[in-house]
Length: 306
Length: 305
Image 1: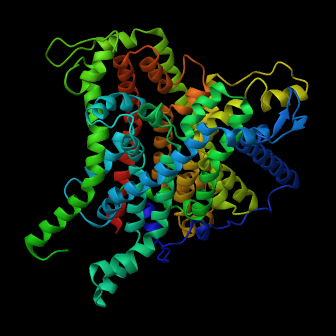
Image 2: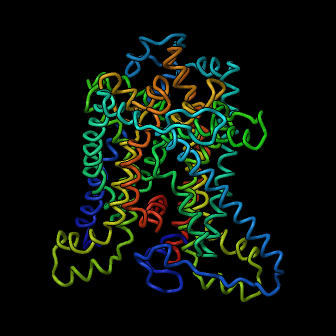
Image 3: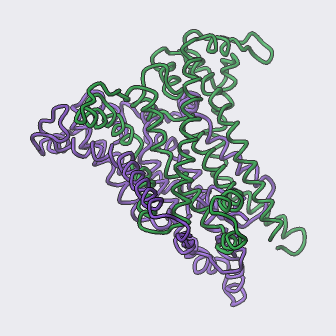
C-alpha cells in the first residue's frame, strides 16, 4: 500500500493518476454529539494557539529580517524601528561586488541546471521504465554518496580538482553545484515517468506512433509537472549552494549566497537584510510556480525508491 | 518485453547506457573522493591525497599494511570533538523528534479536517522551502539574538533577563527544525493522502475511535513515508554546515562547522576527514532504515500488483 497505488491505480479502483493530494482529502464527520460545548471551545483555543505559535515560529524570523531592511534607527527594546529608510537598498545597488555576485549567480545557475538535465533526465527515464542489472544498487549508491558530509567531500575533492585543473574555475563551480542537483533531477522525474500508465504508451504505439512520437506526445506531457518540479528544485539547489562554491570559487568567483558569508560578518545588519530579500526573490517566485505540484506529491513520490 | 535473447540484451544495455552519465559523475566527483578521503584518514598520504597531505599539519602517516588508526585516536582523544559529537547527536535526535511530531500533527489534521485552518498550517509549514538556507540562518540568528524578537517581546512583557538563544545549540536545533519541516510535512501528507477513504470509513464503521483509527490504520500505512522523512531529516542535520556555522557557537557545535574549522583554521585536513567519516557512519545508521523501508514497500506493492 505504498504511493505506487496512489499515482497509478488506487487500491479501491478509482483512477487517481495525476490527481493532487487535495482531491483525495476527505472530511471525516466529527462526532460532535457526545462532546460538550466547553470541550469544543477548549479545543478551538488550543488549535488557535498552535496556529499562532507556528505562524510566529515560521514567519517571525523572516518578518523580523524584512523590517530590518527598511529600518533607519531601531533601538532595543522597541518592537518597531523609530525611523524608516531606503538607503540600505541604494547601498546594495551601488556596491559593484554585490552586483557582480548577482550577475555570476544568474549566469552560473542556468548552466548548471541545463547540464543537470542533460546528464540526469535520460537516466530518470531508464530508472522508471527499464530493468537492468544494478538498477537498485545505483539507486541506493546515489542516496548513499549523498549522505557523506559535504565538508569532508570538498576537502577530499580538492586534490582531484587541482589535478583536473578546475580549481577556481567556472567549470569547477559547475561541477560542484551539479553534484548537488543529481538526486533531485534523477529521482523526481523517475517517479513522474513511472506514474505514466504504460497502457497509454501502448495504445499510442498500437495506433502506429513511433517511439519518439510516443515519448513526445504521451510520456513527456504527462511527466512534465514532475520534471518541472525537479528542474526548479535543482535550480534552487544550485543557486543556494554556498559552501562548495566558496571552497572552490573564492576569491575569484563570488556568487550571491557566498557573499552572504562576508556580509553577515563585515557589513551593517541592514545591508545583509536587504541582500537576503534580494536573494530570496528567485526562490520564492520559482517555488510559487510549482507550489501546486510540490504540495500534490511530486516531490514526495521521488523519494520512494522502487 | 523483447522477443529473444538479443532484444533482451539490448534493453539491458540501453538502460545501463542511459543511467551511465549521472552514475559516472557521482562516481568520479563524489565516490572517488570519498574513497580517497577514507584512505587518507587511515594514513595513506600518497596518490590522490598527495596535494592535501603536502600542506597538512599533525598528520598521521601509515607505515604499511592496511593503515593506521592514529588519526582516529587523535580525534577521539580530543575533548572538544567528543563534546561536539554529543551535541551533534543530541541536536539531531531532538530535531528529528520535534519535526516528526509537528509534521504528523499538521499532515494528519490536513487529512482529516480539510478546512482553512488546516490549509493555513500546511501552507505555513512549507514556507521554509522557499527560502535559501543562508538567508534562513541569518533570519533565525537575528530573531533569537540579544536584540532580537524573542528578547524584545520578553522585555515588553516585563521579563528583562530572558535567555538569548543565538550562538547556542538551542538556536541550532530551532533552525534545524525550521529548515527540515517542509520536507517532512510533504512526505507524510502525501503518504496520508494515499490511504483510501474507504479504509478510514470502514474502521470508523466498525466502531474504532479516531485515535484508534490513526494508530492502527493511518500510521501503519504511512510508515514508509514517515521513515523516509525521518531519515532525510536526520541526514540533513548531521551533515549541515551553513545553519550551525552562522547560528551556532564556535565550539562545541555540530560537526559540520567543526570539521570545516579543523581544516581551514587549524590546517588539519586529516582530522577533519576523520570527523566526516564519523558523521557518515551516523548517517549510515539512518540510511539503513531508509533503504529497508523502501525495499519493503517495493516488495509489498510488487506482490499486490
